[in-house]
Length: 119
Image (cartoon, rainbow, N blue to C red; front, side, top):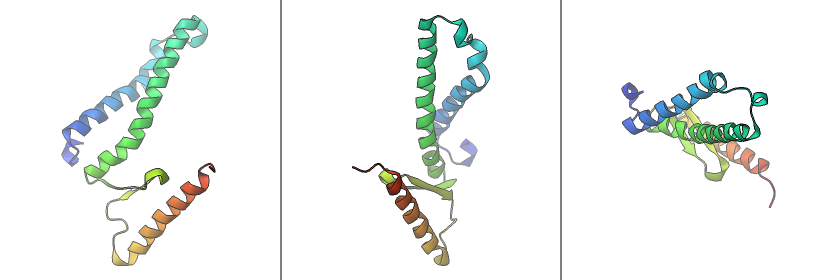
């Protein structure tokens, strides 16, 4: 990633997230006994670890697109509470394509607002 313009802090973060991913994919259920073989206290501990990993992955899922955008690998358009649009760099920047980019953003906003619960 550092060869593609990703900053050192971002590379460090991505490696840290990958280590957490590798833990859950390759080692978590191999290192720990199955929940049916554990006392209640141990199950609570494992559930806390899983909840922690869920938070890590949720945050990483939001941060990774901004990291790629800072490196110039993707375009990231933050739409605030309506979400975000991620696309290839320069995908919709031509004169004839600007309307499509604006339409895409408007549709993402409309869809997000339709899905929000009513106040």
